[in-house]
Image 1: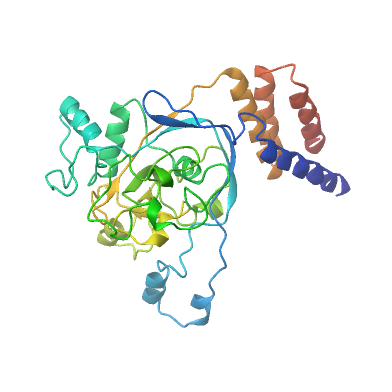
Image 2 (image 1 turned 45 degrees about the vertical axis):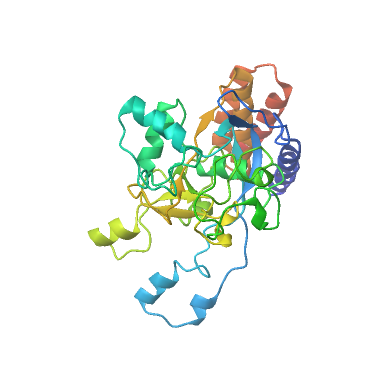
Length: 354
């Protein structure tokens, strides 16, 4: 019992140090821009989600099952942004801007892909405006054509919050001048607009303008149930939410993909970098503002892969999953056999396993 307590104290100190120092490629490193107009998000930890006071209203009120289902998706009770939790991501690139109509036209011309909704609407079809009216499959197809992919929900949030973990891309206070939302303008803004509202990593319009598709399936309880903490990609499949179970209801209310960032049409509360919303992957319209941006993984060398495995071992140790931690660390040592830090940690883990 005493041995386990001492180990937890050691691990806690080690883990906090890793958080503060970033261990490799510091999360405070300056963002870089590629020729393809992407910004680089360095590898490291960040805190995903946010903790809010729990609402006990549902416990106090006597409700029928149907009333509970309706209440469960209300703003007051349906808190899906917590708990705040530590996530580790590899380095990656994300588009500096939302995909524009000009970009999307090049894609359509090259592939014969059909035009999205609102393509002929003069309010939304200027070349420099973000493409809107695309469903999840459209967005995925474009990113693949561009040799990229949709960002994960965690990647999107880290790019929006920056190394300081801001509530909004630009800081912790809502500034109406920094984003296009709440119908303050007649339509979407150009993708290069709102320079003053860019994230610390240099990404524009991550709040407002258009909601943005990400790759993850939506699960309101994913933050509560996921223990991975390492490059999370969301649920492994569709999660049916808030339905009675009938086929029609499942199509109408369940199996959603996550969308992020709010839109020109949505209220200010949707602009926070932790705000989660969802849409059916076949739906191409939400508040006539549904677009996307792409991401791209950073190529890894062996030392980075070893470091990732080492950090995974730390995470597994924190969960007292010592065999898994040992497995991850053995792989790290195989890539970097003379690393004393890895060897020392392996000895500590073995004492817990023996």
